[in-house]
Length: 151
Image 1 (spheres, rainbow, N blue to C red):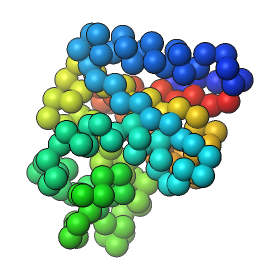
Image 2: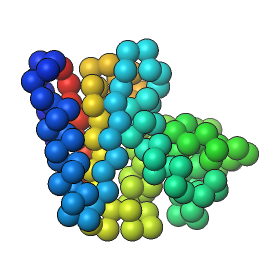
Image 3: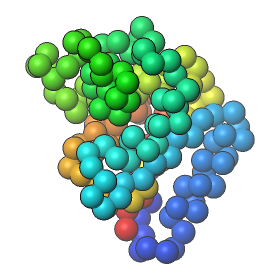
């Protein structure tokens, strides 16, 4: 889902209300934002930081193939990782996108649905936008709703 509009019209308020509805219904909501000069994957990192802090320092077994890719968002997971890296010949956008979907659907995180909210994507870097593009297609068969806003 894409929310478009000029600054100040309530895009963030709408996303906040949607996140509140998702959590009230028993789902999870992870919301982050891109910022000017925020760096690669800033919107994803800020959205997933609370979730990643709650997980063990070593990723669950089902996420091991995505350890290096997810290590871009969770630096503790990148230590000594050798599986699933870009040297494997797999497109890094696909690898990170799949890793994100597996993370959001693993261990019941999305049992009642999961919202991944990405605010201010007009500030996002090209790599973030490439992953968002991948997720737009890949998340269709998952209990994950991706909502992004642009000015």
